[in-house]
Amino acid sequence: MSAGRATAGTVVGRGFLARHLAPVAERHADTVILAAGVSLASTTAPEEFAREAELLDETIDACRTLGRRLVFFSTASTGMYGTTAGPGREDMPVVPGTPYARHKLALERRLRASGADHLVLRLSHVVGPGQPPHQLLPTLVRQLREGLVQVQLRATRDLIGVADVVTVVDRLLALDVRNTVVNVASGTAVPVSAVVDHLEQRLGLVCRREFRDTGSGCTVGVDRLRSLVPEVAALRFGPHYYRGVLDGYATSVAQAPHRTER
Image 1 (tube, helix red, strand yellow):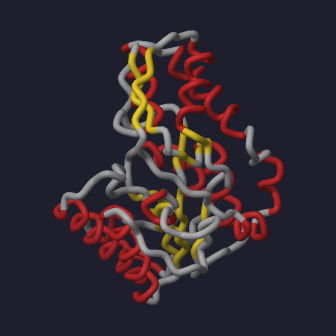
Image 2 (cartoon, rainbow, N blue to C red):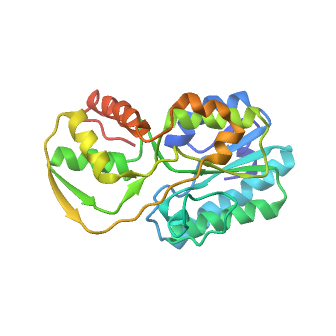
């Protein structure tokens, strides 16, 4: 990417998150949203990490030239917070447990050291129509349709609807939040087994389960998010929030049962 591609009020990227955030970028001409890079949390390929690091450096240079704030998406996954005691907070020391999380934390530090105006958003598991097929929800739906789901008994995930992510990002930018890290998550660790149960019921499918005594999870702290954006109370984050997120996703895939999500 040449620096010129990162123009004010634009999204860098063409994927799932970038498409949903495009209207937000148009409303904030002082900001460049970097929504491109490694999207598979199990990735270990050094060349993929190197490409994202190069893209970040180029976008930093462009934002300095333009005098713009850069929004960078990191991760609030188990890989980042799974070794912490209690909810994972933005101001606590973390010891990332996966190559992907180590890579994202290194890029956070790279951005902070650059001196560029920025906002780092640590995303939990974003759910919505058009997700890449390798992500959790498309994978579970595909397994449900095939009649066998592999369930990690100790796995939990914090699910948040992509429309709510857009709302939160829009509000943070409007409030001129910068030079900090914010978890963007629901704050609830949902057992993957409960996600499978709800999807099965919502899609009207019956499947066999292959249970594995594996998996991990964490609770993502959202106190900073709630403090900065009190309006998130209207999003009804809480122990049952994930059900509405899954209902919306199930409706989208039921309306296009043969479409491959990209």
